[in-house]
Image (cartoon, rainbow, N blue to C red):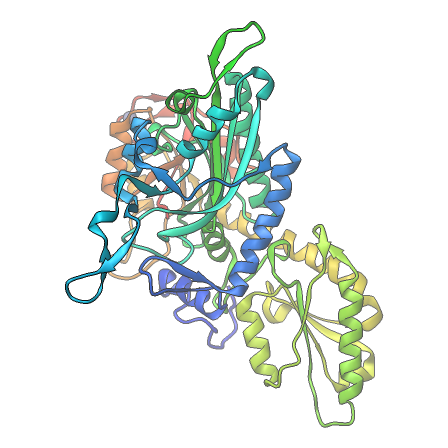
Length: 519
Ligand SMILES: [Zn+2]
């Protein structure tokens, strides 16, 4: 946190009111805004560019792991959703339903749905697409030779939410959903974990956001899944955010959709399916994992622009020379690569004051700011400032060295951001075996004031849903996952596999699980 004795650009600060700080960072960076439709957001160009970068990196990984993109209908017949009992139960409470296909003038002059145009069967606006994609898979899969079937869809979905927050929870959101069908249980399980690996690698290497991964408890599973695996990240208020999930669906959806194939011996079998997804919620995670009291801080691999450059004019005599230098620097740096793409440099020639430009780009989170004024020009150097370090990150670099130096700085920022997030998570992850200590860990000390407290508690759980809900009801704390895969780099990770006694009932437990408050 910036300790300088000046007002921060974002008010309130994280410590003063984390929830409101988040909204103000979104606004100051011009990422998104609320819309005329309650619960639905408008994603503005800077926010959408971040999502496009996420899509680009993920889409490449999906294709490298053998998947192909396709597109399925926005509408799902009501009867399709109803085929899988647990699935419909899980989504019924948040479905948007289309019942008519025409409007007519109503008695008061306004428009109303035409009573004569009622649909024979209502349509659901997809909350997720297992059932509609399953219907296609049932047509496409005939023989074992058609398997595995590896499909991904980039789409929007609707889950009717009453309490919404930009990016984190909106009625309509953008996502990708992978859907695959396999000949065997083993292959489908391998696929589920392969995609969890892809998400883990994306979160840690591209978003610089360390995650803990493993299966969810039965009560937290995707409706209809046999197993749900998750990646969970710690935000700066020490709450967990579920950043991606991968589901092993067994044969349940294959059975309800009729996905059958003839095996090599001529026997008819049910396929094994998986589904997995991440959404625009990741943009919310990115904001909350890294930003500071001056606004957004973007990891270079996901930033819409890696650097911004602007001239600082003092009188007219050096104006042309400074502009020439700026364009030369931008061209030189743009010819270089970082993180698999060409370096993107914004040239800001607007007639705003240098101070205004500086604060605007700070709030937008651009990793590097480059300024050239008359004194720099005379010295043949540019002033380069790292967003993630504040004033401490200033460096004067000769023009000729910039093309080589910028990618090195970006790599350093990416690594430092991950290291800081990991250190922060480690500092707030604790093995707790005493119930009183556990309760105190999750109880604010100043009940009437916003307060950053708690973290990840690695504690024992016997496996009983009753013990799980006792903790949830009392403390609003849930089991985020059963971390079977260890935690990269975490000190507390060594204690995951210890045996012990359930934090609630004292029954035997073979390993620790991750308890936390969450988004
Ligand atoms: Zn128990």
